[in-house]
Amino acid sequence: MDQFIFRQRYKNILFAFMAIGIICMAWTWFSDDALHTRFWSNFFHNTMYFTGIAFAALLLMTMGIVTYGMWFVAFKRIWEAYSMFLITGIILMLVIIGGVWFHYHHIYHWTDAQDVAKDVVLNGKSGFLNPWWYTIGTIVTLGAWAYFAVKLRSLSRQQDNNGGIDDVTEYNQMKRLSAIFLPVGGFLSSVMIWQWIMSVDAHWYSTLFAWYATASWVVACFAFTALMIIFLKGQKFMDFVTVEHMHDVGKFVFAMTIFWAYLWFAQFMLIWYGNNGEETIYFNRQMQEYPVMFWGNVIINFVLPFLVLLSNYTKRKVGPMVFICLLVFFGHWWDFFLMIKPGMLHTAHEELASMGDHGAHGAEHVSHFVEGFTIPGLLELGTMLGFFGLFVYVTFVQLGKLSLRPKNDPLLPESLHHHVQ
Amino acid sequence: MALKNKEVLFGLFDDETQLLSAVADARKTHMEIDDVYTPFPVHGLDPLLGLEESRLHIAGFFFGLIGTMTAFFGITWIFTKDWPTIFGGKPYFSFPAFVPIMFELTVLFSAIGMVVTFYTVCGLGPGVKAMTLHDRITDDKFCISFDITEADEATKSDVKAFFAKHGASLVDTKMI
Image (tube, rainbow over all chains, first blue to last red; front, side, top):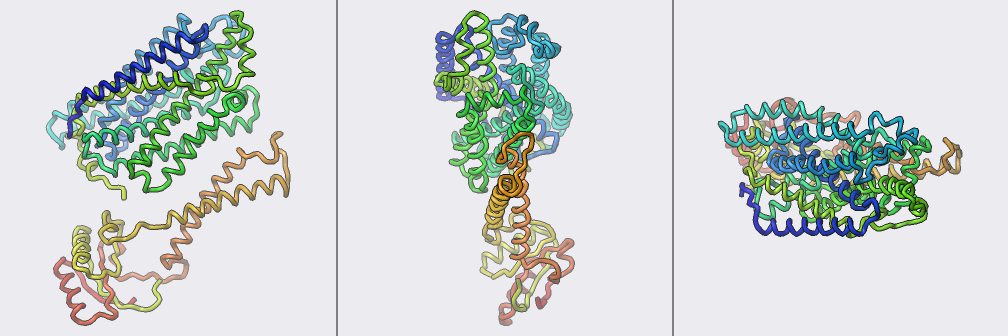
């Protein structure tokens, strides 16, 4: 079938997911410490992860268009639908921006004016790490991305109704728009990842960090694309997407997994070898206090996918692909967990200590395996399920709006006859 | 590797669609194709000829593994036993610093190993005389060849009829 139908059955399941998410978030809120650290870290973690996947989808689609790629055209509507989640991402980020001004969360240490005044490092960085930069940067960046996503989507809609496969008006417009998006997406994502994620550990910095986080999003996006194709084909939609397209997506999961591991290792090794105290403290904390997360990250995001996807055979079979894609999708959620939780917990301990709870700061250095921080607990998984439901809901609504077959795309016939072997 | 000389009867085709339909027809009528030569890789030829998937990449994996092991044990021996050196206050056995070398030797061993294996299997190498049925196979013609060393006249005429039927632009025999 070329037309996606958002069946009641899917809606019920997704609403159940979202309900679980809301219950878990409420539960977290009421069982939390005075600063609601666990609640806000979960909210922020999932917002970043899923908005990033939407951005990665847009990035991959525009790269494909600019490079005259045809391999993805058959399932291009999935990436278009993912990229529309950027609008939801803006709404979620507005909640975070509100907290930067009104201090109802303590994600960032640099939002605390008293600490910034006392702290030489934070003071020195305050030209970049300040609420104004954060607010304007976030709104301009996400706004620009959402603009490109919406514009590409509407061109795609026009293309469906234009003069047929030989009419390249919209195709050329898409190409121009994609070429403009690539530098906008590339440069702004780099700067904003420093603001959004790296500044959670405001004293620490790494030049590689933005690429590393982007690579994480890109792997997650490819893995989720493979899962979505398998699901849609299982439900008898998109029968024109074949095992050859699956093979290509599988190869990209494999390649990007290695790219992610390369960046992870490059960042780790340079800091380890440089042996500069203000840099090594980041990894020292992760290895001492988050050993399961730290080593598990490498195993589930590199070792297992590398060994399983190395063979040609596994990329063309549904079973191994589903297993690895679920693993990697969860694994990069885990990776973002490790980027956000340690820094936030540290900030929260310092805040709580300054509020008079002197036990809190000391507690950090003796406690291992704090559920919700050094290891994801059930509430974290539930919250993830809620955001996952929201993401898939937005995707399905968007998939239902247009035919799954981009029937007037000039590269579609080539894509339908795609062979990789 | 051609161990003994054989006589082949070959036909040249002008484009790959002719070649593909000829190959499909030959397979259907159980004619035994000796080899097919094309100026570039033709899509869909391998499954038509019923070729097995190459096992070269499996060899490549093991060459790579040997490379990883060589690098790991080699550098461990050098920096802990043979010539212990302190770099930047790190221990003699500092695994993260070994990883780039392990990676490089993995790539090197697997690349060289696969090239050597491929050359050996195909009988290629320095000093080997290139065996070309017809010069234009290296330019723009597609060729199917049949081994007729022990064939009788009836078979030969069958093959010629087959070439005529599929529009071969040139049919010839050659000893290789």
